[in-house]
Length: 195
Image (tube, rainbow, N blue to C red):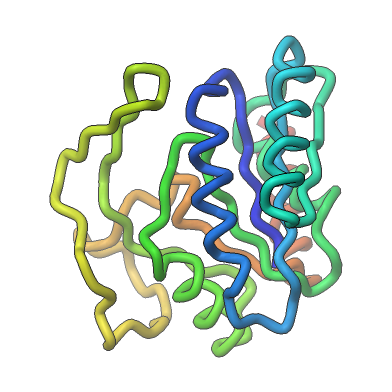
């Protein structure tokens, strides 16, 4: 299982996000947990590598730092990182550099994408946690659930009802690096490049 945390300039939040991700290393999955921090802001390369190395040393988790060398548009950066770092069939979660999952967030996503053998899973999310004072404080715009709903299960994504979250939100994405996913991603890149 691969968790990719793309980052740009929010270095003050990145250590908190990584510490939170370390709590998910016991997720029941056929795949061991790997974390990739994908830097999309070249001037931060040294700082991002330092944060990754310190985190890997403290957590003992396999942590990799990918540096672009140039800044790419966000979505291109996210998905190229998947193509470059995910193993065939590996479950991949995108996790923003200023996002936090609830304790069961990763577990629920991984268990459902593996149970349904899906190529992609979109999830509901609680909007919004805001960090300030250099990541030392946060503010919630709505109340977070205190316990997991026991009735969670994946359903086919039909039409786009009002109750679904905005699918552009980075951290509600979970994928499996399958041939169908890669073909869909390559087609999406072709559409973007032709415009």
